Image 1: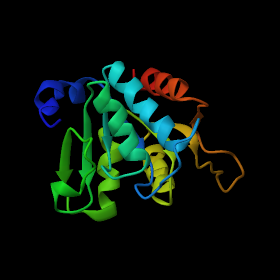
Image 2: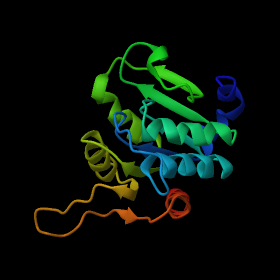
Image 3: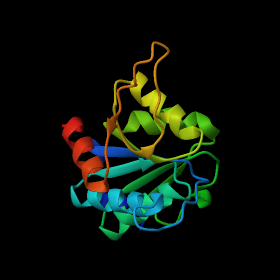
Image 4: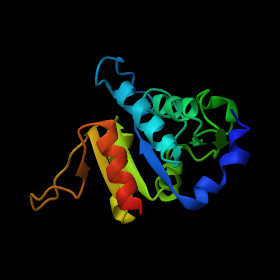
Length: 173
């Protein structure tokens, strides 16, 4: 799997997407479940020639990486700890940062768009970082939020993996 890094590294220069989700999330894989959706997103991104930059953990993140790997795609995990062994087994390139949650800013910065699926408390933080950086955020069964003035935040809502990937790729140009 790690050999994909050399072959696919140019994808990072061309176009790649960021998928966020809480690494502790363990949604059941049922029809339309979070992990099933994430795997389909990863597969569709890989089929479109886009790579994934993520936190490298388990749950929906691991499912997205699995989908990308099975379709021959690239997934880079910016891991919170100091060991590459802490990443999920589907990562093309597990990169330990030793930065804990601080690496979320790097994960979000690395992509041209963010696809948020499900998630725990780290996901709205990553959504906020992405919006602050001017990134498109595609929301697929994830958090929603409103500004203090009552207006909804500028999220692009998707109802399927295909819609989410299409919107992210369109926005990323």
